Image (cartoon, rainbow, N blue to C red):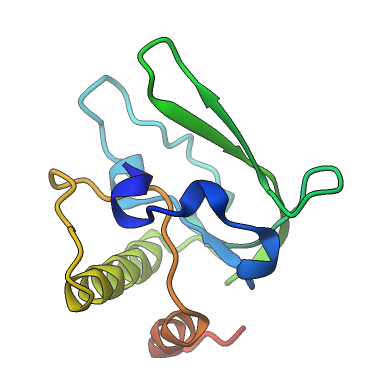
Length: 144
């Protein structure tokens, strides 16, 4: 599903990404359709992580891409956790920031005449320009 919003995702290089945010989405805390919730109750799951993709070997790639028997591509991302955006658990704030980031990406895609439909689920990873992310974080009084 990532490729619906970010067609070039598998070709991205570490030099193209200033930082990333690790966010557990709202559905992570609910009981998904396949069974029990994934949420284990830890504090870290309720705080956005600031992460930096790290290159593999001598390349600029931070991904290992592999296929499965059903021909769906899967990617393993390599990164370092730089820190957390805040110190105490705040699931509501995290989901609010996630929703704002998703809304900004949908706006960007529509403005560029691209497809946004992902059957009411959103990709687990997508890119936004740094200024947009900083603007969203500033609404919540965070500055990176």
